[in-house]
Structure formats: C-alpha cells, structure tokens
Length: 115
Length: 112
Image (cartoon, rainbow over all chains, first blue to last red; front, top):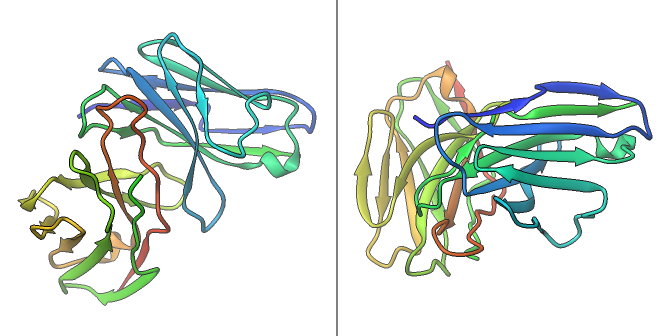
C-alpha cells in the first residue's frame, strides 16, 4: 500500500523558535496533502489542505502566519510552526491523497514539545 | 461536509464480535465512507471503505443501508490488540476542495 512518512517523529524546541515538519509520499504522487493536529485524548483536527504548487487553504481559526505550509512537489509538503509556544505542543499528522475519491494515506505523526 | 456521530466508547471481551455504528445523515451522493483505527501516538490506519451495501476485507466488514445515512463497522472476534480509537469519515477527495473531517471517534476497549 501507499506509504507516507513524516520527519522528525518527535522534536523538542525552546519557546520562540521555529520548527519544520516534513511529510513525504514515498510511492505515489500526492496532489493534495492535509495537516492535522491532535491533542491528548482528542480527535484529529484539520488545520489546512495543500495542493502542489498553490497556496494552502487553512481551516477557520488556524493562523496561516504561524503555521506555514509549503507543498513544493508532488511528494513533499512541509509544515513550519513559527515562533513556537508551549500551547503549540501537540501531535501533528499529515495525510496525502492522489486525487481519487477513496484514497487518503496518513503519516505516523510528529510529536512537538515546546518548552 | 457530512457530520458523523459515533458512540464515544464501547467495551468488549476477547473473541466477541464488535459492531460500531456511525450516523451520517447529510452524506452527499459522491461521498465514500471510510473507517480508520488509531493507536496512541500513531497516525490513523485504514481499515475499510465502502460506498453502499456491504464490503468485507480480511479484518472487518462494513454494512451500509440503502439510504446511506449510517454505516456499521463489524470486527469479528476481537483481541486485546484491537483496543484503539475507531473513526468513521465521510467525504469525497476527488472533488476540488475535498477533505475529510474527523468526528469524535469511538474508543474501543477489549478486555480479557
């Protein structure tokens, strides 16, 4: 089956720094990638949708200047958390779709801890 | 976007069949129904997907009535390792702007 990877799997950073998380589709071309965040014991919350070569579409309430998303190629999307604060600590999960109605593949997630 | 409603939690014992029902009253014509399993600190894992009637694979069955306003995930003979959160998602990723929104999910606890 299709594989989506994320890097890093976990990261710890100091408050005020920026952190970049990569999401890669390893064996298919991802026309669309999605970024979710998940707090402990909660469901996944969609943050934004990114299409290759175009600006990301952010969900209501998600700060686009804080969570920068770049989808530069059909196999790579990045999420940069700028000026991270402790409240940004969360589990970030990406998923990728090749544009067919029935295909969405999830990455293993990245645990971000901001001190 | 179709909203989904599932029971928050369910308990079962090893070897039993577990049925989790999801309600999606405003499902659109082109929407698929997909179920995912998630373990703590892992990304969701695909279980099964369907459009109508019944779908079966090596791990589960999915029952969808004719009106498609609900669906039931059936896990035969669960084991302790099936303890996880199960999510029902409804959507069409093939259309422009298509996306999948997670509901609250069902936390399944399998006991020995």
